[in-house]
Structure formats: C-alpha cells, structure tokens
Image 1 (spheres, rainbow, N blue to C red):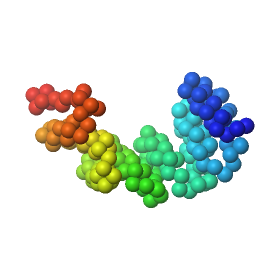
Image 2: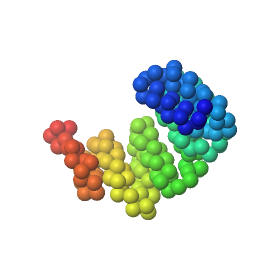
Image 3: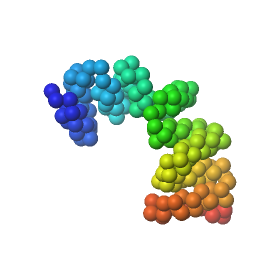
Image 4: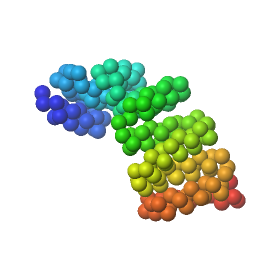
Length: 193
C-alpha cells in the first residue's frame, strides 16, 4: 500500500482509459493517505475524466475540506462549472484560487484563467483586464513564454471583436517574443473576414 505507487498505478490505468481500475487504486490511495488533499484531488480527476461531474465536484470539495487552500482543486472546480455554464461559481472558485495563490506564478495562472473564462463568456473588456494583470506578473518574473502566450490569447480576443489591426499587432508581439511556437499562425486579411 505504498502511496506513491498506488497513485502512479491509478494514473496508468487512467491513461489506458480503464477508469474503474483507476478509481479502485485512487480509493486505496485515499485510504492510506487520510488527511491529505492530493489523493482526493486525484480521485476527483478520475471521475472528471469519466464524465462523472457530480462525483468529481464532491471529491474536489472533500480535498478542500482537508486543506482549504488547496488551489489545484479550486481551479478544477472552476473548470467544471465553466463546462456547466455556471458563471457565478467559476468566478467564486477563481477568486478563492487567487486569494490563496502561494506564488506569483500561480497567481499568473489564476488571472490567465479568469481572462480566458471572461473571453469565453463574451466579457472581452473584463478579459483583457485580467490578462493585463497576468502580463504584469509575467513581466515581473521576466517570463517571456507566458508573455507570448498572453499576447496570443489577446490576439484572438481582438480578432473576435473584429479589431484586426490590434489582433495582428498581438500576433507580431507573440512572434517576436517566441518565434518558434507561433510560426504556424496566420491571420486572415480584411478580404477574408
């Protein structure tokens, strides 16, 4: 009943799409690690991958009962609520995530997620504000990869708003920062829109 081995075996079963076996091993992992959030979070992830969202939510929340600042479960709950189009819950869980984020890198992810979800909801101005907060953190950390990712996300927001010149500028920024990852991007010209 070595915990790490149980976790690894469970994830192997999950990768093979043998979810019943994965659940069995994750439950054993939970039983040998009482009072730890990660086993519950892993069990929740298995339920999520099976499409059993209620069971996933239940176990993510159990992980948070064990450790109220366990931010990985908060991010997962926000994602499930996004799939369910429960927008107030998305905000609630991401706000909590940002409150407990232990580092600038984790906060950067939180603001990026908020920016993405607001874009998804059509709140493009609000989205750009959260992405700017994420970019400020990326600047402070001198993280060029994240700056490129954020420019790339902004590119699509501007494109969605039919602001093609701003979209192209964000594309240029992304390519300048990280030319290897974005060489496949081409934006339509005005004639193609």
